[in-house]
Length: 306
Ligand SMILES: Nc1ncnc2c1ncn2[C@@H]1O[C@H](COP(=O)(O)OP(=O)(O)OP(=O)(O)O)[C@@H](O)[C@H]1O
Image (cartoon, rainbow, N blue to C red; front, side):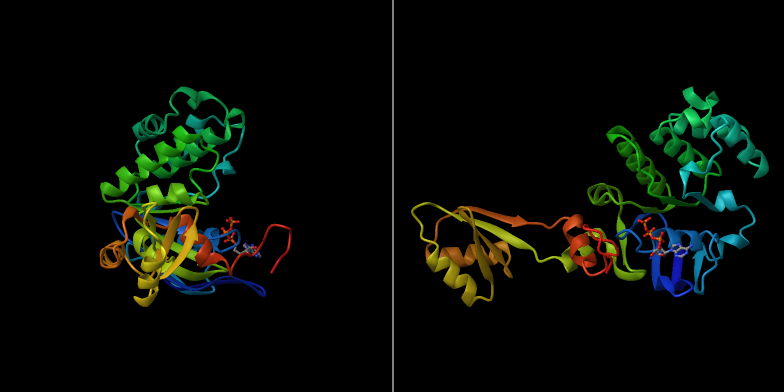
């Protein structure tokens, strides 16, 4: 479990992370989301002890990561996959990591196999595609069979097959009891991968919780209603308004907010309206993300900095 409590980081005048608290639970995949500059990387770096917090704490399984006696077994991390020297081979890099952390040499073969990197493992990292570099970064993170995995933008540069692989990998690790914290800009991908999300905006917590709860709280759910051609809309729209809902027309359908499908069905029966369609519309994580972070975009298109 990762417990972040009142975490703050300032760089001179700049407040990168402010009074941030959240928990990433064991056996779950937690997605750290936020627009550019929201403080995701800074948060991960403080969890890993790479940046000293100005105030607050970040504990991994109850202790500061820097106090861990076996760091690679406690936490596997990938923050910048490109940190590997381009002249080294993948195997040489992993062998050295394993040796310096007293990990069994056979584990190198295992993580190469797990990440699909066995075949190119004797090639120099400088010849790798972006996706291969990411896979190597993930291989290094997995080397210590860690209890906690922290991955900054793990699907960056991966093709659809690679994105699917990362999703399956982190989901299976979480199912086996690993705490997984990962950041991503790909909302649709995060929606399929994470159980919980932590949304940041300008260094502050904007929302946190199970994806469905965060989406429901941030967006108004609606119901799409289409009436049979012989059925006029007026009786139903009047009944919806009287019941506290709102309607808007879209093409040949109505979108109703403020009432659920069952309530609308009852109103349709009462007003003699013949329904051709009654479909609950669920908002996506992406819809929720835009709604939650619309006031905290640091860099907007057009180059304005607000
Ligand atoms: N070393 C530093 N010195 C000064 N400001 C910094 C430093 N590192 C980060 N910042 C600032 O802190 C804020 C948070 O940055 P951070 O990299 O954590 O955001 P992020 O959410 O990871 O962004 P991105 O998605 O673009 O990677 C940004 O405004 C950034 O400019």
